[in-house]
Image (cartoon, rainbow, N blue to C red; front, side, top):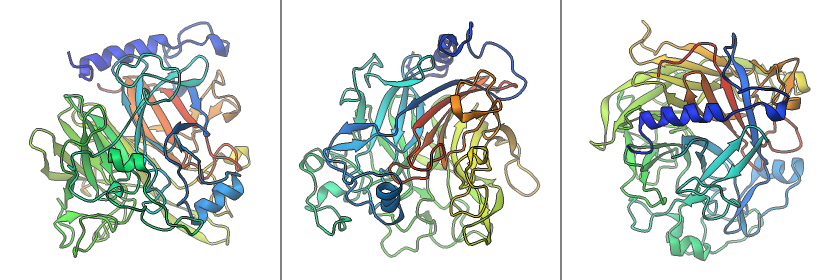
Length: 479
């Protein structure tokens, strides 16, 4: 049996659930074994924001508001000398043994110009629901690891020049000028290993196929990128066709696409594959765009495409998902309309999916975060919806059904400590970018803290830790 088959995942999920217990939280039985009437927190663990791995110095290219926030609000001194932050977690996949997960880091520091020396990592981790800590694991075996060293992660690289376009490692100097006004040579380890960086790809999603290969969803192209289990690129990056034929460009391309040439971009930057999942047979990949095409008449449409792995091609069909909208009062006192975004998707079965949708807010208003009248208001909408490809409304959009309101999760045992107020836990992160199904009653979610300059949702003067939560559902999913 392949370690990532559906039957093995069912076994892993059951074992993971049985492994949970309440000993450290005042309970006396397994968490999650009891029925709940509302979505309920049954597990909480976190990785400190200030977690690093060895590597080339990084952060010299952070600028603008992120630089001001990182150095002023959060008090960091840049660059991070001879190390890489373990942050920006945007995707989660089940590892090969119970309780072990693969966790993907995004492009680094929020943009292409800021991230040419931010290496792209996938980590093997083991959340401990008793101690509340997140431990490293050996990447290939998921055995316990002593530290987040080279045995606990893989780094993406393109030694065989498969991607099809030039990368940072091909240049003598990093592109751009540092925040100190200097030009820097590309680090020798990046050049010699042809390591991929956030200057090459903006990875935001990840799945593992039936052969154990990794597929990554990129936002710069947007592209699908295939690697083996060591992180080596195996094939040319796959572009996205303009399946709905919205406008004249036959492809969906952002302004950051390295192969754009004279074509007109039709997708905003940071609008690509934030969300991606794979079917239970692990043969088809489903990609969901984060933003609308500029050629679309509906700014709330998000296009869902289907990629067939064996054919190495997208199917000639696409679905329309419609995000919600709202408004907030900004620091100038003006009412601003906001269109929400989708941040992850995960397959329930071959036609039903869960989708995470969110506003731009950060922080819990009950904990003193501003509900209005600020540049960054408190979170209001962080939700998980269910969609079914067989259920399309009269308006042509997939029908949405709310499954979890992440701003209203029961926590009667107060597993989340001070993050729970009056028995209610909120997950009010600026970015909630990873959701996966543990079993038919349980979801696991992880936040992206946009380190080091992102908006904190627990404390305003520091980035969020990476929080891992387990949510028990009152109604089972149809796995």
